[in-house]
Image 1 (tube, one colour):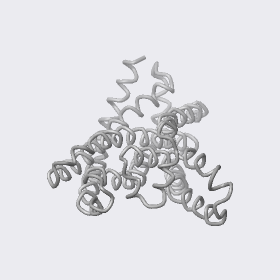
Image 2 (image 1 turned 45 degrees about the horizontal axis):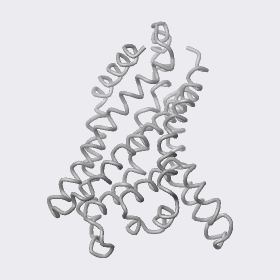
Image 3 (image 1 turned 60 degrees about the vertical axis):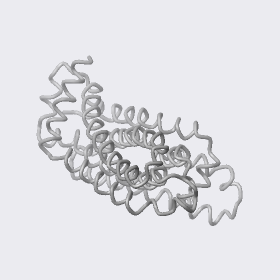
Length: 274
């Protein structure tokens, strides 16, 4: 089974190389990370944190938007594309289970994301340490950011596979992927903000808000990294939530969401008929 999964992963990685996905994802992460490293570390003197920890807080905001978008762009045609090209019937004739096919695609795409975030965040870390050698104190927070970014990407890769299986056409899957990104990354936080304002410090703000934040993989990722970097003060309003929610709860949410997304993708793919 392992050999079949790795063989599928190697094939998908070569396809991603031909599509320039590796170069695109890496360049985007390096460019944006360097911009944030240069411009996002200004408040170090105000809050008493080292330059790299503040850079990690800025990179967390970047990752919340960019990593899910990259993951969905890589995964939306994983199944719908096979259906449209007519290669899915041939793929399913091989002695490979559908779950193994998805696992192979997931490994290849996760490897691309891991390469992109490591190089991007690494470039920002080199810039921060070069400007302030004391910033090496923020390296553990950077390590947390790298592996949690990979898990956040895996969550949205799984969601992209599920949408691709449901849509069965790349155009429909692309629309669903954009809709999911808007809801999970943008509109969800706006809805929470509106509820907080209307609640006026009542039950929703004190009891339901922490659960609502942990129920969204993007918010759980942000809470986990802000708490781990000890730079919540640099993150504005959500910094208060990061300080009030135990670290283990946000870490558990970050770890569980990729498994849930992969399970949904496998269930949706099993209903696809060639």
